[in-house]
Image 1: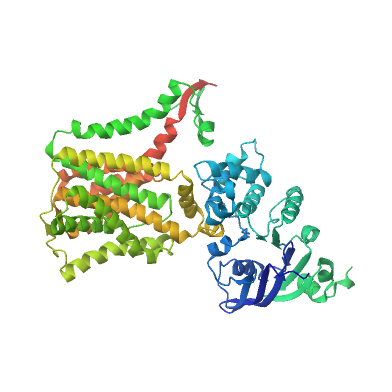
Image 2: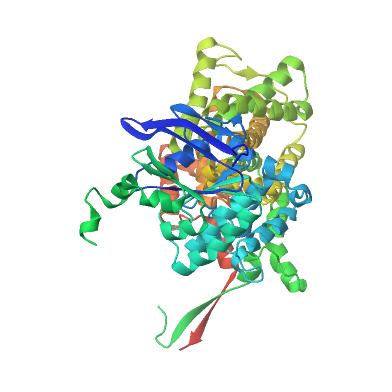
Length: 259
Length: 337
């Protein structure tokens, strides 16, 4: 690809006390990518998302979005640029109905700026937009589901709402932190077309995932992290063939003996 | 005890229309069903100064109203923004001293000194609370508790604003009607205004900050900015109460920074039902007169006061208003099994 990278991470390091969560990790993402970040538990995947989106400060290194340095900027400023994220542990506003959950991102400066007529001004306008977005991501419009309290919704809907919150901001980049985890096979199957559609709409995705099979269906490039180190990067098949990756995932024994 | 062959059936009236957020106004019956509780409150409050003839209890009405404003301010900040502030007394003190200074030093009449003290006090309080806004939960509570204690000691030690004597000779209200009715109108405006406000889009942002501030950050909104606005609104209400207090007593002193102004509104909110906004007003209406009645017990007053509070917390911890609202929407009847 000869285009400018949308997001560039340069030698990011982060340590919590004595634990090196990320050690000089670098990568680039280009517009239209679905970029997977995989790795065993505790390998620093979520820390990576937190560092990019400003939720935790990096010790060293730089994050560049469209060539602009966004390292250690406050999370809301980064979200304002169009770099949005979902949370691995869902963070809905439990005391509000599902559609009112989306009024909050729609109220943000970015949504008001980019939304045009969809931004709305008067009371109630944002509700309509919120229902539209919920319908887009698979809430049944004519049912009671969008009006239900977030605290009564099942996991599948809450995971979708995480995505909906990002979409309400009209993002350029979404960092999905394990959107498939906790979902049943059929729920995952219905999520995949959704992600593909987002890609077609021109949104770049970074996906952190443990469900490799499903991830490889959508991702065009993946990166493997282990103990904060970058092990490999490239096409899914090539990466999984890598010896170091196999070792990290399956242990140090040569598994060919057992197969 | 229920007879063996019947059981109690409970129906939730209109729960579907309520959760959908739209009231179905289908006839005068539905309309009265919705309007009656609001009307009872409004008419009841407006009649209060007319009904009470005893001079002593007339003064209690004003005090109730002041505590109601404080409780509203506390309920808004606690249950809609998630900032549990124990610094209510600080807001009262700032509003009170400011009104007293404006009145005695600059000769503003209460008509001007009260609004000026409200706005000015809110700006001042917001500015000094701002450094604490990144704090959450109990840390914010403890830090805000320090403000009134600190302010009282500073005034005492530096002997400013009249020191321990306070500021004397503050103008009073022309008559009790002006005093009480302006307070009651302010309470009604604040109550219904806040109730509308928390359901507007910006109000939802506040409630979202209470629910999950990380998600609000991820939504591209600065939580510090919205917390600042919330503190401004809340401290403004409390400064207003403080300014009224000073003009009613015609005196501003260190006791306007007393912890009573932090604690009693919290107790009123607990009794009335937090998060309802009406509850705290009702709580003040109950708690402050009880406190006056208990004066008959002399030094044992606080013991009975504490017992009443404990009984409420143990047996009706959700608060009267939450309980009342639920019961109002329910039918109960006995049916044969």
